[in-house]
Every structure is written in C-alpha cells, then in structure tokens.
Image 1 (cartoon, rainbow, N blue to C red):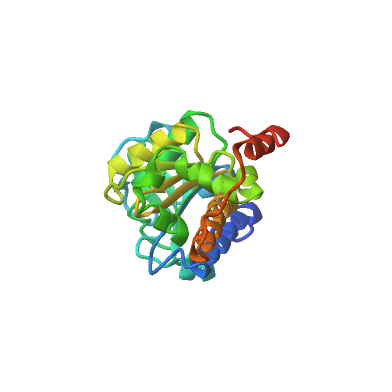
Image 2 (cartoon, one colour):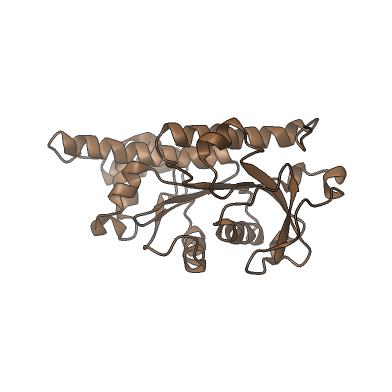
Length: 270
C-alpha cells in the first residue's frame, strides 16, 4: 500500500521522530494503554500534490474556530491508539489532517481514516496560540511521567515555581536544558476547554512544559524530540529527589547562587 510518506524524506523524517518518541514514552512507563498524545505541525513539509489530495473523511468539527490554523496540516496520534503501536506503525496509529478554510473543521487526508486524539481541540488551540505569537514551536506532547505526576499530589509543590526551583537544584543539566522550568495548572477535567485555556495561559507565562495536577505534563518545542527532552530532564530531577528521600535524607540541592551562576554563564532565560 502506498503512503503519503513515499518519496517525501522530510515529511517521513518528522513522522519517524514521532515514532521514536512514542517508543521512548512506552519504554519509560509514561504511556500506559492509550495514554498520552502527540500533535505536530507539518505544514512546512506539505507540497502541492498533498494540497490537491482528496480527503478520506467528511469534514469534522474542531469545536471552536482557530483562525491562525487556516490551511495548516498536522500529524496526530489516533484516539484510543497506544504509543507502543504508534512507535512501530505510525501511519496505522496516527493520521495527517488538514485544517479547512473555515478554521472550524478538519479532514483526514492520509494514510487511513484514523480519528485523531480526543484531546485534539486542546492541542490545536495551543498551536493556534503559538502561531499567533510568532513562535517557532511546532510540536506538542502530552504524557504521564511517573515521578512528576507523583510530586503533583503534594499541594506544597503546586505554588508558582516551587517545583521548578527544586527540580533545577537537583542537577545542573536540568537548569540548562529546561531553562523555563515547569508551569502549574490545577486539576481540571481532561480534554476540557478550561484545561486548554489554562495551559495556554501557563505557556504565555513563559513556560515550555506545564504540569497538569494529578494528570501529566504538556510540553511544546520546535520538534517532538526536543519536547520529549525537556520532560525527560525534568523527570530525571524528580527521580533524583525521590531517590534521596527514599534513602532517608532530603537532598540539599544547588544553592540559589549556584543556579544563578548557571543562568549567567549559559545565558538562560530565567
């Protein structure tokens, strides 16, 4: 069976990145059953032949109007699809969609009529916001990193930047590679418009990774590998902290002066 990826190496590479990250999420235990979602803006890799491709579904309502997404294309993980299957067969467990000119509907164009994640409206709302602010970010990732989710059950860590500073202090690389820290969104119903709105507010408050209390994290970056990397380094710090606590002591962490030095030397945003 032919695929939209055939003879399109740049597009195929983006989908391969999604498959690679999906495998990592499963291996780490961050993607139980069909948990987690990935949505990537692939518009820059779309050629005239793809634009002329007929849809393989009727128009599907997004549930809102997103004016910055007119004519955009996305690769999306399928609803009820498992990350471990997305890793092996991305075009059977995900699909490419086209946003219609009304910016309120989309259609699936390839390879199969795999319905996108139920959280697609939330992901698309974030992408609409990113385009509107002129961001270069094209990838969004939602996953369930165990240690970070566990820490979100402690109300003390949900105050602004408390968890950020703790995680930064565990190992210098976290400050360097997740320099905007971790935004916090209080518990809200998964897939809800309210959750999407609060996530956008957190991103607008200068975070690339947002903790959804008792649920998971949402990360945005230039590509899906970079989005995964930020979550990975933050969760490593959470793991280091928990290892110290399990050995019977509270980790010292780096001092404010040491973290300020890292920010200054590496010219970090925070």
